[in-house]
Image 1 (spheres, one colour):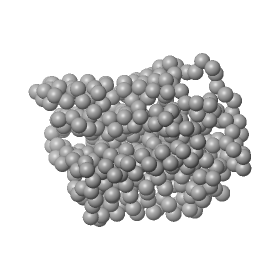
Image 2 (tube, helix red, strand yellow):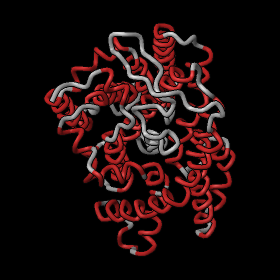
Image 3 (spheres, one colour):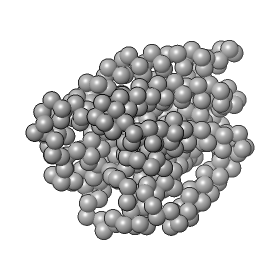
Image 4 (cartoon, one colour):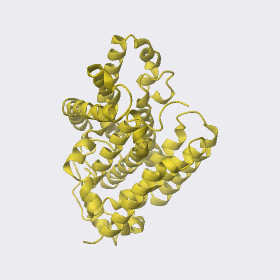
Length: 394
């Protein structure tokens, strides 16, 4: 087995190993929130950074391929797909969160922050009633701003788009020292933009050549082992306060960006992450993340002795959350995705698929974006990602 060629990369219609990464990220975040000190070694707070990098990479790859195939990016179609992908499940879980809080006599805490939750400014909400949803707000603002910035304001050339993205990363990094309050919001956009940067570079034949060696099976295995070592070493980094924590987050995001190309190959790590049970969890990772607090409420309501954070609560909450996520995936996510896909469908039809010669300028590709899951089907951790970062407010 050899490395993945540029033509093969461009012909990929899905990156199944990335679903396995989503599953990993989702579960370690639940462990971080509810597993107690015994699960601190998993560094579950970092799961959201994995999702952020994935989001930037996948969304930008989708947009780049659409631009190349159609000659432009349809912002209307993109925003419709995002709206019907993100918001229906989000509002269902928000309503359930409010209903449960009202029944428990704590409805006022949700109502106080409701304007923030409705306007997707969750990270600045005054109460902690729906705390972990702040990551969805981060993702949502990225979805709103990034297509306008990278595909409307910036001319569609590789160098200009690359330069603009690097400048955006530098500008956000420069803001970090002046934002010491939780959740250090600029650094999370840096994580997302690192994924965007990776997508831009890999979309170009010469840029892809830089990462192509990582797709060799042996090299991919070494990269995967190295990433696991980096992840497991996170608790030993003396970087728990501002601004060192941001540097820690940035370094981890760079490690994720280096991991992603290695997961495109045919090696053992890709096969493991493409294992159907992991893909199953990864496909439901968005809903799994959203319902984790509700799942804990169910578990504690049924078995009060599980209330202290620990392995029992973590395992039980994960099982309940996955069951709820599966229902949401089947009855809310998928139907709404189909509605969004229908509304976003182009009237001009779909350009034909064209083979890509790595020695020639990139040719148009199919509008359905080879190399990605059907975009309406799920996002990269939506938040596609959206998992919680480093705990609570500071």
